[in-house]
Image 1 (cartoon, rainbow, N blue to C red):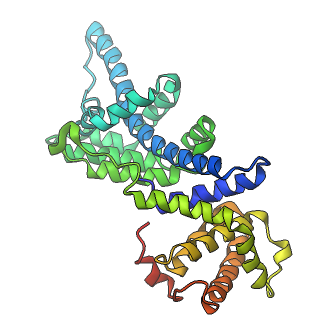
Image 2 (image 1 turned 45 degrees about the vertical axis):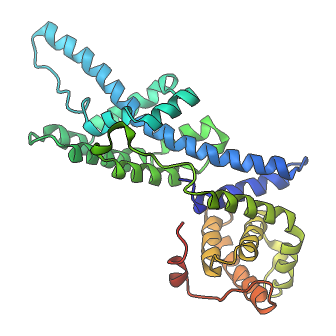
Image 3 (image 1 turned 60 degrees about the vertical axis):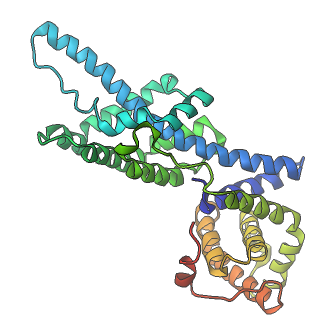
Length: 321
């Protein structure tokens, strides 16, 4: 699940924090990076358990409504949403159950968040259309319901974003990326796999974990050298007015250019320009784009990096993020 987009984001955050911390220890900083990445994987699982928690709360409320209806002799509430086939498979999933057991994860202490989301779901057009559909109930329809609910009510949810940020400092800015993996997981669920459906692993392979370690270490250990590259190529730029975060972002970008020969230069530049848009000043993205382009040409021209400068469109197809 942890991909290079998330790794780059975490390294920007942890590198900045490293220089703000007076007690600098490379080994401890690396452990902090890997722990921070593992917390993103925790968020992935916790967001899956949120679907289960919402449904369990719906069942609780349905039981109360059913008791009332029996007592008053009124129409019984529908249990269609409570018996959603996709959610039942997710609820029984072995990997998710193992996570819940190992991390002692529960939404019980945050039940008001769950209830608020359930109320929003029940008021949505997606839910009302699903409940009104009298055609044969299928697994595909049930799974699609939750895909739509997640995409429209759980993604880009400011209240939920704030909730996670307040829960852990490691979850700042993670949710946007993690949401894409939850949606991918929902789409991949197959009823034939029953409770043995595979969730996404923490790392697709060890190569990405090595990428995180190597990039972070190169960034910190070669900082002076990389900053000299910035100085030597900044004659047409006002280097003295560069925001500190811009220096950090470019330092990491240079580390990636130098350390990973298989990653095209323009892929690297594009990735860190996007990070600058999110983490630095409004003018930083254009500045960093120009600086990194100049630095890349310098590194190639002096033989410090053996790569070719190619178009961004071609490069984007070369690396799976």
